[in-house]
Structures are given as C-alpha cells and as structure tokens.
Image (cartoon, rainbow, N blue to C red; front, side):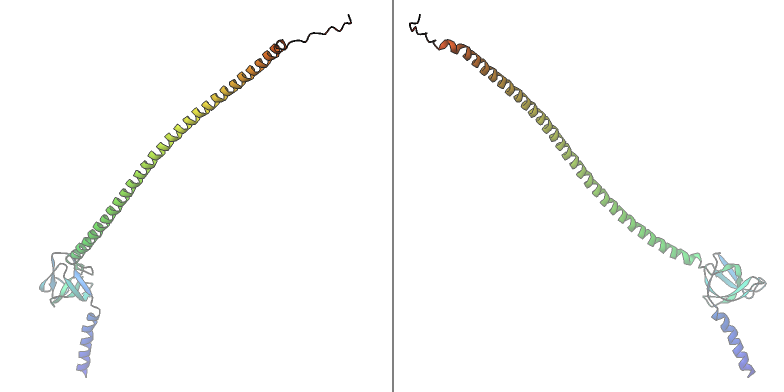
Length: 204
C-alpha cells in the first residue's frame, strides 16, 4: 500500500509540471549552457542554441535558474534570464519577412489601383478641359455674332431715322408746293376769268 501511494505521489509530481508546461524559447544569444542542476557548479550536460523552443519544467528563483526540456528530449537547467516567452529571431524573422512580402504586395496593388484611378481622373479632367475650351470657343463666336447683330441693328435704326427725316422733308416740300400752287392759282385765276360788261339801260 505504501508503495502504491509513493508511486501515485511521484506521478502527481511529474504530471504537475507537464500540466503547467508551455512553449518557451531561449533568448537570442549565440547559445547557453545546460547544467545538470540550478547553478554553474553543476555539470554542463550540453548547450541550447538561441531561439530554440523549450518547455519549462521547474524554476529556482533564488539561484536564477530554470529547468527546461528541449526539443531533443534533454532536461537541464539554464539561466532564467535566457528564457523568454517570445519566439526568437529565427522564428520571427521568416514570419516578419512573409508579412513584409504580403504588405509589399498589398502596397503594390494599392499603388496600381491609385495609378489607375489617377489616370482615369487625368483623362476625365482632360475631357472636361476640352469641353470647357469648346464652350469658350462657342461662347466667343456667339458674342461676336451678338456684337455684329447689335452693330447691324444700330445701322438699321440709323437708316430708319434718316428715312424718317427724308420723308418729313418730302412732306414739307409737297405741302409747300401745294400751298404755293394754291396761292399762285388764287392769284392767277381772277385774271383768267373775263369780267362782264355793265349794260347801259338808258337811265342816264
């Protein structure tokens, strides 16, 4: 029975770190030594490269060491300052490069769209400018026609006024001629009609 409890206790102790285990990484140094215990006085059992993924098994805050399990199945102690929960550059750089590639692709696509939109706007602006020039030319022609029409109207009015004056002069001349002719006729007519001689009836 005691052996059963001892076995269960050992299993619980071993299972507890595994339950709390999470992915961690060796910080970006060239490498760090892995010791058999929490300190430099313990035997070096190997080294862990920078950026390697490890699982934290235990830690000793007083000694400043953390027990880790690497991807090769080795368990040992490394300085806690070299353990971080951020992936190393070896892991992050490819992801960043891929993200940068996607950003460049999106930027290139956006620039292409912007250039196409700019080209469309320029073409539209050119069309509008051509329409404005055409309207300005048409307006100028209309203005010139209006000026010519106004000049012609003034000339016609001047002719009408001159014709009115001529007509009045003719009326005056005709009236004068008629009046003069009547006066002359009145003066001449008595001389044209013979006078009757008075009869002598013998009463003398």
